[in-house]
Amino acid sequence: MSGALVQRLARAVRPLSDPPEARGWNAAELSDLLPPGARAPAAVLVPIVARADALSVLLTRRTDHLSQHAGQVSFPGGRSEPDDVDAVATALRETLEETGISPGQLDPFGYLDCLETVSGFCVTPVVAWLAQDYRAEPDPREVAEIFEVPLQLFLQPDNMRRTRVQFRGREREILEFAHAGPRIWGATAMMLLNLVKRLDATP
View 1 (cartoon, rainbow, N blue to C red):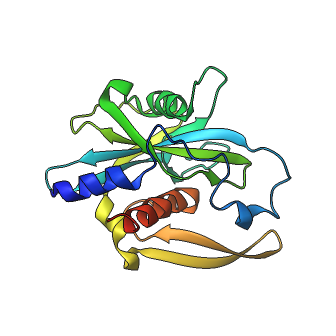
View 2 (tube, helix red, strand yellow; view 1 turned 180 degrees about the vertical axis):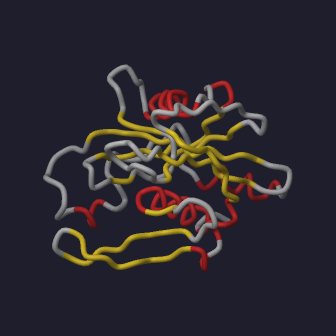
């Protein structure tokens, strides 16, 4: 694997010393869906595994019986709790609870831009290196599957699809990445798109 992509990725994200503003880059798109005021803070972890031949992104598939986002592909993460000192703490705690991957197997190194969701959250994505020999013990109440996807798949423009749908009174765009496994779409796809855009803008 080329070290150039590793270095480029490290430069593409916001450093941990410079957290993103608590306003999603997609806020204008959701302005007619959400009431004014602060969104509930949340964080997800974007784990990157440096394999011998490529970088891969770890994702989870939610169990089918959940009341929200059942069966959907997502990054590990969730709502921030009062005891969480920052988004990194939230992302690491939620990752441990959902996947069994401990903080000792992770090395957070940056942020993507915040994303707002139709459920009223402002999500901060935390990007971290994940040990190649990581051990995962997913919580069967929340996570049905943990899998990796090559980062290169998301960097290929032909793999991204934009669909127009009617939602709450007007036409809106939904993103999806073509993938042979579980469907990667919605908020997860938008966070991946943000990663791709930041990489594209980084020499």
